[in-house]
Image 1: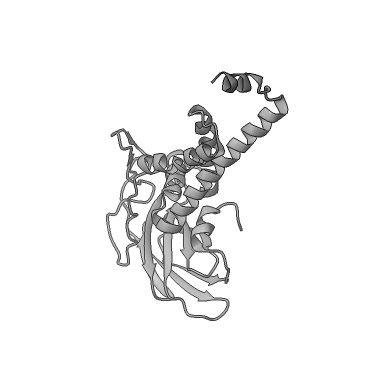
Image 2: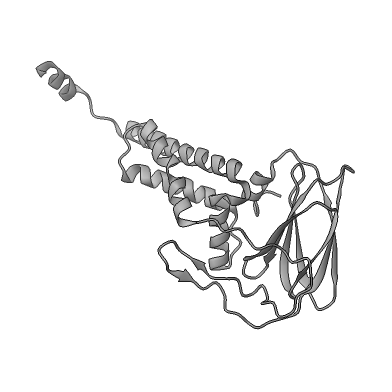
Length: 250
């Protein structure tokens, strides 16, 4: 025992450069752990991803265009901070701390599927400037917008085609309020042309088809019918990762 104590006592103190390298290594391990957890969440859950939901909640609550990639970077930074808070002394422990960050996000952002897009005319439906309030797990509601009245819905006809001439198996169509960034509705269509009905107002239309680039169109629905034609360009990037890089990758 005395020899072990002497060995420990004789162990030289780390230099400042060694401390910096060690801190950098622990930070990288924590960030990589968080990134692995995030990628697993995106690949396994796709539309139900906690990361995508987190970005959507931030966008809606603060009315800003918050790209999911910023949410990923935020989680990686939080993982690094937590690795020091919990005093992870090895790269392995830092990695585990980083990977556990996703469980915190999943608890804070419970998934709720967006409503389906209406394919029939409706009267008296609340306009998209009045999304439902989001409620945290501990019961504190956040009012995202106040109702502003009712309105008749108007038709929006979307025509899809692919640049390579291949048929479209199915397309995930999302309509988002351009002002509040709240998702108004989302549906899957198996036809290349379809019509949905929504109240007049500004929207962002997103078309996602696996094997093709995710396309976005800015629309302003008025009282008269609106038509939009979208050409899909082939790509090797999965739709899930395109959604994550939304607002950054074009």
